[in-house]
Image (tube, rainbow, N blue to C red):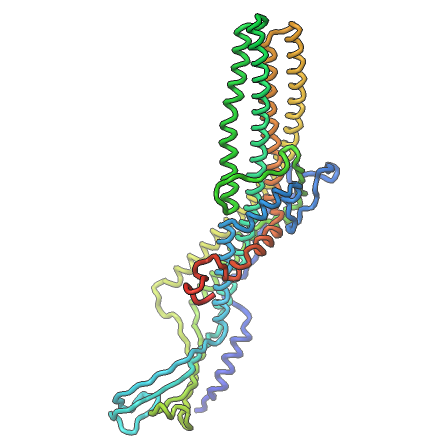
Length: 506
């Protein structure tokens, strides 16, 4: 009977493995999404206004559109020092390490081995056969064992596909957090400037009321005013004073919240433009297909789906044999000094085929679980897409309606200023009582506070729209990586494990 030579058999197996192009398990296909043809309240080209900033690609640093250099500096500080961002950067490096580990399985695994032994050997099943079985012998061995797992059924390829998707998911997470940090800094800053405006209104109103109270105190002393009028004005002063402490408290809390996002201790925050002078750029609505490519959270959900889909193939490959080539090259001798002498070389080459025979349903259970996990992750992906559409539509509605609200509030404040001025003139000429003046001034005070809140709501709606469209994540991510390059490279000097004398490796 003729036998195939061993080298030829190994070559056939290697060629089969290299030429094998298919991998078990399903190939990923992006699920169909029922995207809306058009968002409600989406601006058209005919609705553009001079204040509209139409640039809204993923590379745009959209927060610069507010034209406030202080805000720009705060966002930069957040992208540099935010702790969640720094953690996300490190997790990307961790995912990349796992990807490198998985990729290494495609190559032969070569190790080194060295041993020295002394004892009595029977002369059987030994690398070196002793001349006299049972005699006292010294054996030295040095070898390079190698193993190469042939990815015939694509299990390793599916593992690599999953690891690659996990790294992409980690990157998308970092990008999503960077965008979130930028949005949170802008949101808190806008809220802070609105509270500053409300506090300024409250303080100015309080001073006006105090001036009026002093005038009526003099009138009361000279008999031209009564105690009822003085009490009415005093109630105005008390109400204005009562409105200030909650505003001061809210301002302090917002400053601390912003410092927390910036990775700083509590303290004051520098101010730039007032709320009513901030430019309010409105990004274009875009189309739903572009939305899927922009938003980092949608990209994250898809990468998680890709990983879950690949994991099905990785588990399914366990049903099939695991084929590996093995080889050893080295030297062995009965005297350590003769290890490299002629005739002491050893080698072997072999083939290992190992597969499941009976597992009691263990692999099948993993396979069922992997398929169920893929279905669960797919539902989450579709949910993230639907959430993106919902957020965008809500933000578009908010930008339209808050703009109308600000216009209405501005008209209301103008009307109430006229009302307060005329009612005060009528009171001075004796045509009305002071209760009319009191009502006019109280209404004006509340309207001014409402206007400051509405201006904040309008600015926040612009931020929400940018966030919903996924704009600016590239700019935010680039600034983040530039500012945290040391963490991304694994040599952050602030990390205790990288300080000299504590950890020897980078």
